[in-house]
Length: 204
Image 1 (cartoon, rainbow, N blue to C red):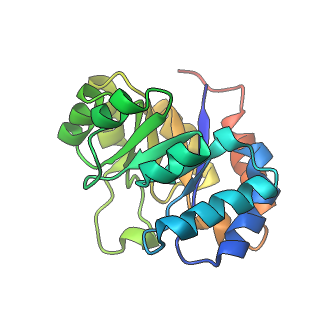
Image 2 (cartoon, rainbow, N blue to C red; image 1 turned 30 degrees about the vertical axis):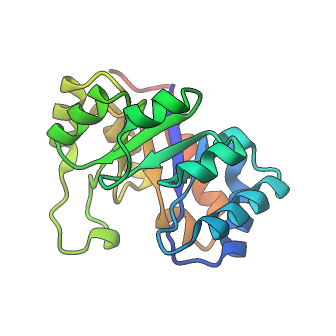
């Protein structure tokens, strides 16, 4: 099952993020609240607004703030390198789906060993979010997929025309930020990604 993750850019207002999420959520599997500059109270407000906008609870993933994720019973929590270890969270909250953001094979293996349910790996292609940094590319994704058993969600500069190649390299999901949230027509863009993900002509 291929997964489609949307991740907030951190550059939009709370209301704009919620509005776009309400338009597109039926086409995606998860919507990540990745707002490093916001407090737990502000993040909880975003969760409440998403729920009011009829975004399903299980589709919401909160970055780093395990407390908010547990209180609202959302779909999961996404951890960074500075976050608590996945095993600590799984011990106390086994119902939470726990992902970890990784950039190397070593980090991915550690995340798997510590009980993460999946990893987000990138950046795969050039992206303004990582300007000046060389992308890791499909070969690194393919290597990672051959070493770990948990699902890999690829991120970084992935456009609709990249989708087939990313999944054939071993990803189980894709994550997109600005390509959707900064688009003139976010709904059209999400539908375009989903159409590419649903292609039945792929040969693995």
